[in-house]
Image 1 (cartoon, rainbow, N blue to C red):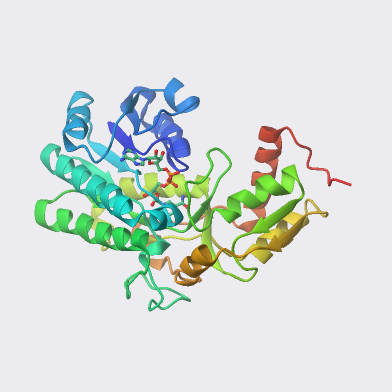
Image 2 (cartoon, rainbow, N blue to C red; image 1 turned 120 degrees about the vertical axis):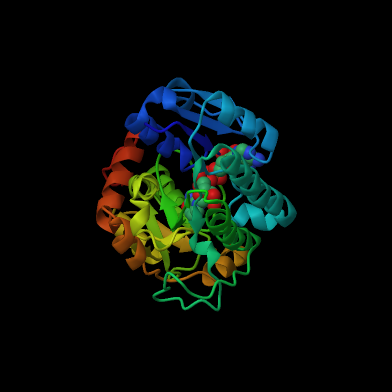
Length: 322
Ligand SMILES: NC(=O)c1ccc[n+]([C@@H]2O[C@H](COP(=O)([O-])OP(=O)(O)OC[C@H]3O[C@@H](n4cnc5c(N)ncnc54)[C@H](O)[C@@H]3O)[C@@H](O)[C@H]2O)c1
């Protein structure tokens, strides 16, 4: 049985990963931590502590007190937020990871760290993007993700720390709102479709990026940490994907359920430039071969579930507004 500590647990991924980990490993065996107080389920269903992941002493203390053997390190600033304050993003993304890896080295913990499609850049082959390829990102977020991948591999090679990670694509979910990424439109669009029937999208209609529904993302985080290490030729970090979306394609799918839904494009040059520096489709063959990765949700199934869950949450009807 694992004893797990999650950093950045109140965010978009943590809000769904923590309940899944608690269901699998036992409620009291999963300590959720964040720099801000979490709401609802996270605090009610098991231990929660305020913790700044860049504070190595506090992290060390929490790992000791709870006899933690596995750290899921989710705390980070995401792409669009990071671009507004690159120095802060560097301090949190790199400072947090170094603190986590040092504590893991001292206490023999395994570490899961999510990387991102942002670890690629404009000189990366965009379609398909191989597992091992050029990584010269042009965002501060991407710089911290590549450096983080290398640091995690280094701690594995040099100190034997069991570090593993995945390169998440844009994540679509209905529990917590996204934290300021370039793919947030794919979540916002559902709220606006149900609430007003209209959406002004900050990316251009044909901007194609990899995406994944949160239940698949949560399962990937658990499965890669449970994978047989003997089979792993890669560690930090595995390409994984579930679908390739453009705003136009997603709007058309939503319109199958809400025929009056309309979308316009009010492009934000900063986020459009970030999106254009990322792959159009990543190749996740290595994850499939080395630990059996396979997504369960494509565009149709994800759209039905998002609309159903959000309609319930917002108290809206799925019948088209007339
Ligand atoms: N959501 C996505 O689409 C996506 C895609 C690729 C990779 N990722 C990666 O997954 C991880 C989690 O992402 P998310 O979407 O849940 O992000 P999020 O922004 O929703 O949540 C991050 C959490 O980290 C917390 N945090 C910030 N600074 C902290 C600090 N110093 N100490 C402790 N906590 C701190 C925030 O309060 C927040 O709750 C990140 O590493 C992110 O880069 C996310």
